[in-house]
Length: 276
Image (cartoon, rainbow, N blue to C red; front, side, top):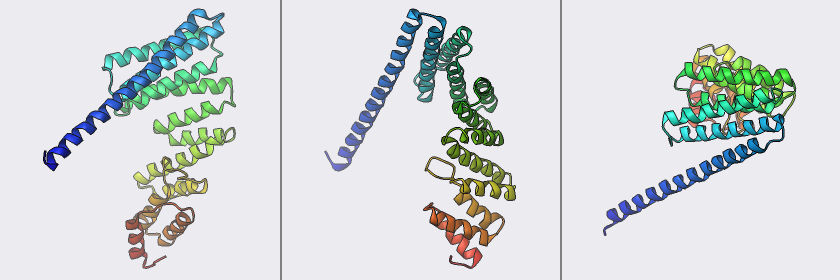
């Protein structure tokens, strides 16, 4: 066997190994979902009162919803099977709330099911909005019942952010920050997202304002969040030609050890006639 043939065989074996590992991972995860469903079913059947039964229905609804989300994400089932699982989830959450409408966990869990459904429908904005709105309604109910439940503010903020309502998300995360430290990270990301929206609309002054707000709050604290530094330098360099302001942000980024693309920095050097 020559080297080329050997590489082909090795490549094929690697692909088979990856596929086999993926199938095993899917099987393990779905087995865990099924175990949770069975455990919750047993809890429903053996519950001593409606409060216990409501908790069990909510847990089973979450397990159905998570199985539906996972299978849809990895395209493991047909659309009609996904719909059936999702309907089972919502039905169980409905049973839970009918038995105990004071159970905020049931509202949070149903809201999560609606949120997950919405994020899987983002290619169809109207459909996604339908589910985001239902998730928001459940989280707002939790807030009405307990205005200090930071989880509801957190999830409501995520809904508003995903639903194209960043101003509302900022209000939600501001309230969350007063209750839990996670709100600060959410808030600076929301400011950055809002800035990006205005940037795209060519509303540069207000975009810069919100990029700076995000930076002030520690924006770009991790690799997963929205980064305000690079787009703000680009805005000042390319769109508004405010080179002193651009250099100020570059220096802030350097002190905070934030990455900026070398091409952008070179563009700023050339256009501003400065090297630092």
